[in-house]
Each structure stands twice: as C-alpha cells, then as structure tokens.
Image (cartoon, rainbow, N blue to C red):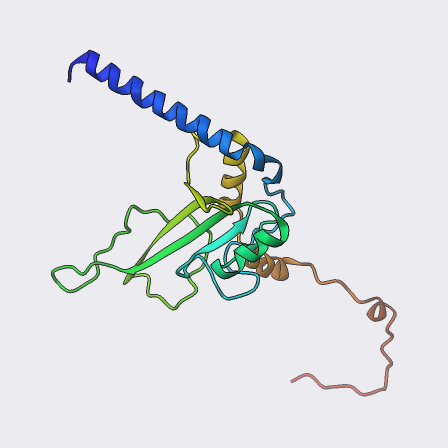
Length: 207
C-alpha cells in the first residue's frame, strides 16, 4: 500500500474514533451522576433477576443497574426504570451452544472466540465437553435502548470504563453470599458462655 494512502486511511480512522468517543461522551454526560463504581462492600447481582429466574443465559439476558447493581430480567427492567428513573444498565448475556462435531463424532474442543469473562456458574446441567459458552456485555441506555458494546475503553469516559470493568470483575453476589456463609466465624452464644454442666455421677466407659 502506498504510504500516503496508508497515512490517509489511518488518519481517517483516528478521526472517526475521536468523533465516536466525543459522541459517546456527550451521550453519557447527563447520566454520569447515576453511574457508580462498585465498592468493596457492594454486592453485584449479575447471576439472577431480583424478581424472577432470568439470568444471563435467558433469551433476554440480565440487566444490571449501574447505580444499585441489582439484576433484572427483560420483563422487570422497564418497571425499575420507570420507578427509579435510573437509565444506565449493563446487559449481560451468556450464549451456550453445542460444540461442533468432529469427523470421529466427538465434540471439537474449542471455545468460539474464547470470550468467557462473566464470573458465573452455568444454571443448567451442561457437560463442559459438549457445550461452549460465549459471554457478551453491553451498556444499555433507557428509554431508547441505545446499546454500547463492551469493552469500549477508548470511546467511553474513564469513570464509565472503570465502573463497567469493576462490575464485570466483581464476584456474583449470590456466590459471594454463599462463600461468606462458610467463611463466617461461628460466634459462641452468650447463653452458652454461662451454661454450667452438672456432674450426675454417670461415667461412660471407653470402648
């Protein structure tokens, strides 16, 4: 390729990217005060809807509010938007499909694009050798359902990028709750502390 043509092409690409970044930045400005970065104590509900069994594996995916980090299925997210006015959600989808079959009849051991980044357990009883997953994430702005594919690091404002990255990398709230329930130190009851055991004279001989 001629050097002048190459330079013109790449300058044009940079110009288009800069315009896209400016457009997305301008689009998100009104919503910036409502977008939060999850803190250490925040729970991100990205594995199941708060009101149904919808999950990222459901047909409509799961919408995570970028302010409260609650998860909503497609039928409930509109109601949450109307009730709270919160407009920015992260749409999470996990596509599960049967692997292509090789000539010998066995499943071809590969993942399409290897795009599995959600910290989720499969909700269905899939054999990992026969199925493959691909995860998808988008920012969705209500009420127009404007979608911004993620990751989109160069085009998004820094705060939005950090918030999205933190939400994607956070442990699912349900998994965290289960882990915490096992890790929590067992506290001695105040009644047990003052409990006296009486000697009734009975001795159990050793076996």
